[in-house]
Amino acid sequence: MNRIRMFAPLALLLAASGTVMAITPAPPPAEGIRNVPAFALPLSPYLSPEAQAAMRSAVINGDPVAKMDNATVLKELATIRKGADDWAYGEIKALRQRYPVELHHETWNGVPVVRVEPRSAPADPAQRRLLIELHGGAFVFGRADSLGLLEAIPVAAMTGATVVAVEYRQGPEHQFPAASEDVAAVYRAALEKMPARHIGLFGCSAGGVLTGESLAWFAKEKLPMPAAAGLFCAGGDARYGGDSRYVAAALTDALLPHADGSLPIMEDLYYGTVDFRDPLVSPVFSDAVLAQFPPTLFITATRAAELSNVSFTHSRLVDLGRESDLHVWDGLGHAFHLDARLPESQQAYRVMARFFSRHLDMPLPAAPAPVE
Image: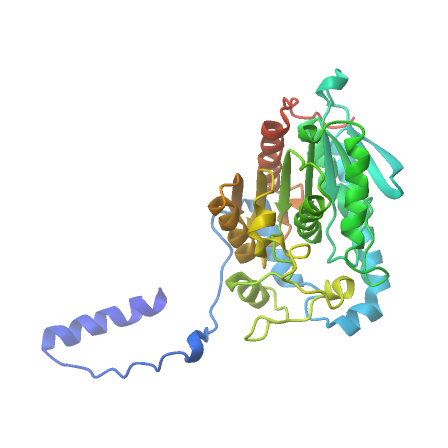
């Protein structure tokens, strides 16, 4: 924009005088690769003041693990895990003041879970619904009772549904498909309590990836599909890809992928040497699997690495005649809705609540009153 303003008057003057300036065009980029010059990117004008403050802080403080290779992640994993959990536990205290819920630590089919019961649940047991939540953390950190509750608590309170956060197995202690097996075990236990049409499945980041993988696993196991699914800040390609992978890395000063798109990621500590085009890992590469997906909701943002992956998965589902909703927030980053203080996060949670209400046939409760 500034460059246009600078040179447009000069171009008009030369044209009026009849002077011709020979301009040597830049050579075309080799192999279709565009070398992008540096530029200043301001905060989005569409963000709320709270979100602008959060994004400003993110730019200033950065992400301490953004440039860690996997050897460093392994060395620092205990510290990374403790840091993520400690931060989440602090956020959960505030969430429990805002959202009236009760927490119950249980085991379903051998898998630890945290059952979140909202006080807004319907009095009639026939009207009760169940949502299964899968936490994020790159398949190497986070817990059901830490990162999992950051979205399980608001979703439970705003839908009136019971939400079960799953403590699935992660790397490097466990390898794929351990997490998918754990989700399937919890889902089988849920099916003993109510029909599939009253159950939903969702997750954020690695939990969103695992949501897609779990649907593929359900199809393999010939289990009935849940009524609806939410892939939040994630798509159907477990490695991510596309333009946004590069753009987000540049914006967050993270490691840039190589020209072929390859880049070691923390998730490799869980996946090992799997084929990332295996539909049980990346269901977006199988039309047969995608054709069995239930109505699916995608939540992402323009500064999130998964945006291209999400939009591609959404387009594949739509092309296959499946019901898919895509919502993108401008100027925000990966997993923005986990900060429930942001007005944009509240918008996202309302989108989630209405989506699950529609597909699980459950009326939404009144807005929850803060806990006294």
